[in-house]
Length: 404
Image 1 (spheres, rainbow, N blue to C red):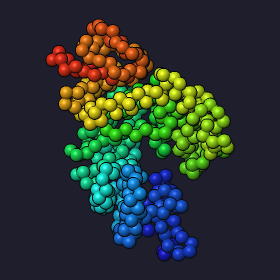
Image 2 (tube, helix red, strand yellow):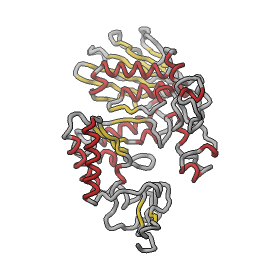
Image 3 (cartoon, one colour):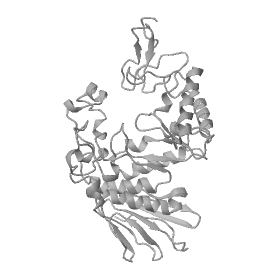
Image 4 (spheres, rainbow, N blue to C red):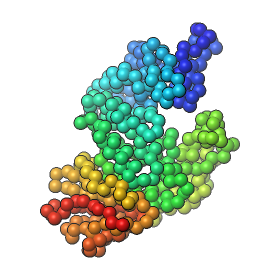
């Protein structure tokens, strides 16, 4: 009830995080907007009530839960000030008590068969895979946790490799990875391409990467048809952060526009006025149009999902990188028993030449071709992605070397 806030904590957007309630005269804390007060997880009655809500949904048959910014739910019990002039918010996130709460949460989930959980771990660029992995525990906390390092990457094969490998390296022995290239806060993956050039080719390549990496793929709505971020005029901005920081930051609305179902009014999403404008490309980038195009981004996703369902190695196999970004080539082998699948991705806008395939290998997917001619060399098209079933021939060393 003091007239002064308890400490110097700030919200994620650097506003004062304490708000004084005019009725009670007390301050309450909010990590985001004042309309979103944080819960006190040290209050046993609150925790019990919250877990009762979780059990309610489990009893209804939900498959699992996504926990938003779960590393921010517990704060320092002494309410100590955060260090000044530091990007690290020491006392209002990443508190060790969070791990205990997640263990209790996991124990509740384990009472129900075949349930899962995934956590969003809030970090600043360039990401922190070690912190993310810590929330998995010893297979006794979250089942999965998002590492958003890839969302901070620019379009560069070597940077992608380093982010992916760092995440794998950070995982505990029983930890299982998961990947997302877009989300409701960071916008669509194509935003990292700068100007909208080659977006369709890059969207196809990212589909192959997402659906062939070791880990659970998460597809943000619209990515499966290659939707891009939309320019939102100030008068149409809904996101409060966008209104607050415009024109330096126009908020998160660009990646939250209506799904583009067809070329009709409002993209087939509604017969009324949508809450945000559609991209000007919606009349050709839409589900109906792409369903009829064999080579569309949508059908690339469909074919890859079918392939992933069919091939256990893509679901459960290990992974070994065989090319780590040299000349824009990223390649890796998925291995499970006697199954071996090689994935080759050309991030470059130029053709790249690699050694040809052994004759016993089989091309099972490509964004650009249906077959491969025999020969000592193979020319990859710009942004081409290939999936090859490898033979077990002793002459097959499963190594891709780029040739200029």
